[in-house]
Length: 117
Image (cartoon, rainbow, N blue to C red; front, side):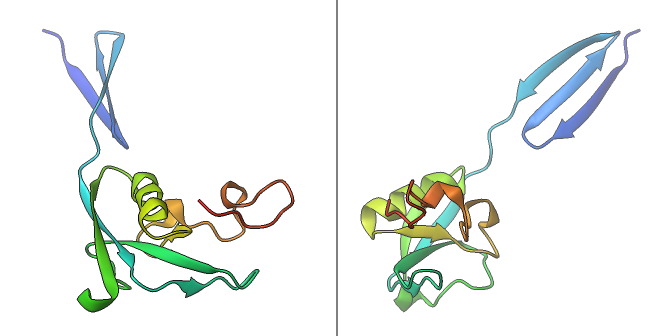
């Protein structure tokens, strides 16, 4: 009888059966994202940036100060849509840390200045 050992790492499940390894990728769940209706002041160069939050974020603004972006599998897609809908956007430090870009090279151009979406 063959026994299977499974290890879950992020969205990847690794199963080892009798010395052979098989990998299967599971999809990330859909999460509802929101963007602030009013931009926040970016402290480095005093530009305005819209923040993207998840539905359960402790820093999610009230319903009158946010716009629903939709459901996405990653915050990067939500931030990209926020850039199209609002303007320069950034992930919330508390709920979208992967997309939080303070001093981040992704949002800086070759000159070192923060670039827009």
